[in-house]
Image 1 (spheres, helix red, strand yellow):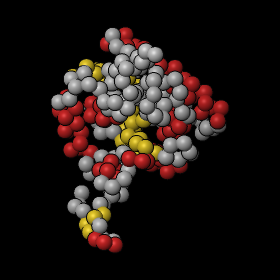
Image 2 (tube, rainbow, N blue to C red):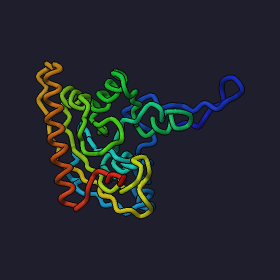
Image 3 (cartoon, rainbow, N blue to C red):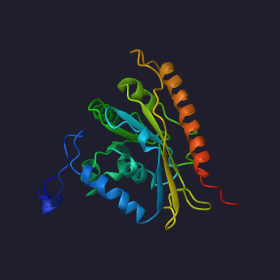
Image 4 (spheres, rainbow, N blue to C red):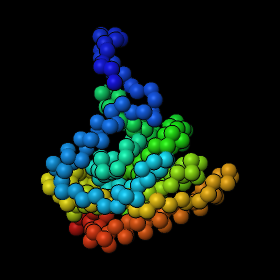
Length: 240
């Protein structure tokens, strides 16, 4: 990746942005340093990584209670991941960095055709796409999954691998707060599944039905991950 170049009024630094989303230049380096870096902060156990296909298109669908969930899923996946990240993060030097590791900007609250096309490009190139189908941090129980995941899975034919991140939400803590120092965290990958065959007729009803099946499978995996680890996904409510 070339260094910064000075351009524009006032000689302000302008950072180059990668143009081929399927070949992020910083992905390999970020993947190598991710695990040791995160383990310097928290005690992390990764389970079920053998469920992630090592080749071909695949979609990771994770629950989301904390900012740390994204880096955890990214680092502990056995292959590089292109993640959905909110558009507001792509500012200044973070823009080329996030694009350099293959992340895709998402305009929340509106139909984002650019995000859909970028996601399909990633999957058609045989890569791995990571999404938080609830759209934002919350209870982390897959209680509200948007239909975009079902549409992408049907359109691309990519299997979905459910992922449960447990231990990042703590009792009495804000959902935006990072886990405490040396907290125990489990990242649990589940068996891949296809929500529905793509018959070419992606009606709103067909996508909604597929989305409902996805919620069932993601919720079932979350409960199984909780059973295996003895953990709970959602942060406990703060007493009144």
